[in-house]
Length: 399
Ligand code: 3PG
Image (tube, rainbow, N blue to C red; front, side, top):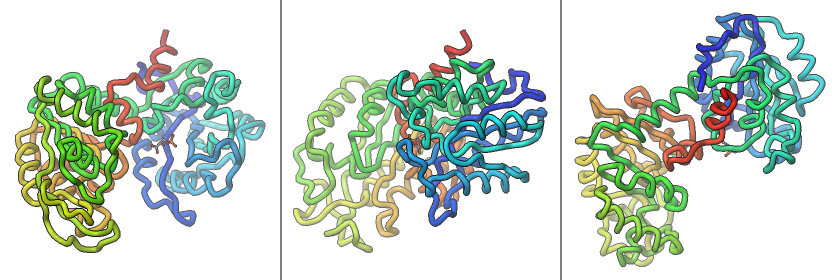
């Protein structure tokens, strides 16, 4: 896979697929980390004398032009961060985009409006995607994919453009994601610890299965731990569980043992009668979860156990909070885990997934981690050991 610094882009038009799928409330971007993460590649291209065409998606407009999902605010913010105007090509991609791309001169930047306004972008088959990838590729001399967040999607801008682009390569962000996550999977320093949390086992099953036997320790917290408790025969009261995954949880516990990965589950919890509670009603153990309550965070003994495992680690991959961290009273577990990982001096520490990222930023500890992935679903699928469509497409276009 070529990287942008191995390609001649001087004086060329460069089409960038970026992931600028950022949260916007009332027209205001509330977290611009994904835009900032792509800036080094864009700045590099401009410094080399290229002109830049940015393309991205926002939300799921399902092939319709939805004004609330226009990239207008994103183009403005990108312009502010770059210190230059970024003109938006409004609506669906067609003649206006072709003209504006043709008129670009070195140093200029334009942004195509939401790719998903075009139904072909998310077509499930090559037929449904039609010639959209070809049209996008025709706008530029070089295609750069710097959109890790969407690397797991078979979208036209991800998998079809490389088939038609004259030259295609990865941007610095995509390359960094590939290298950091790849290093954790292929040649981790040990002990290697996977910390997994969040609401659902269903979204993490693939990762857990792939990492069994590869990691030394798997720490499981958050509501997903409840399904494991259920599989051990505990009564979890009103806690969030996925009863249809009890067998899968039991299988993971049995395999962990035989494959040499130690599974660490919570032994105590903070509980309340409702997820809207502002305070915990008390601390319980796995055996004493009140039948009318639900567990909302890991308890003090669990925090001590988890932190002592993390403190010995040389590689940590973390996805998913340990509890309902949005409520201060139930954030202690996530914050303790975050601080323990951030405190590792010589380890490789990787965080991924929107909520986990939010915990890290809440504590202002982002710069204490080796790498914060911009991926959500793509991060999970990468760790499941799958070859993501974006990487496959870039490798195939080299042939
Ligand atoms: C994300 O936010 O995880 C990416 O931008 C992908 O978005 P999608 O799940 O709507 O494809």
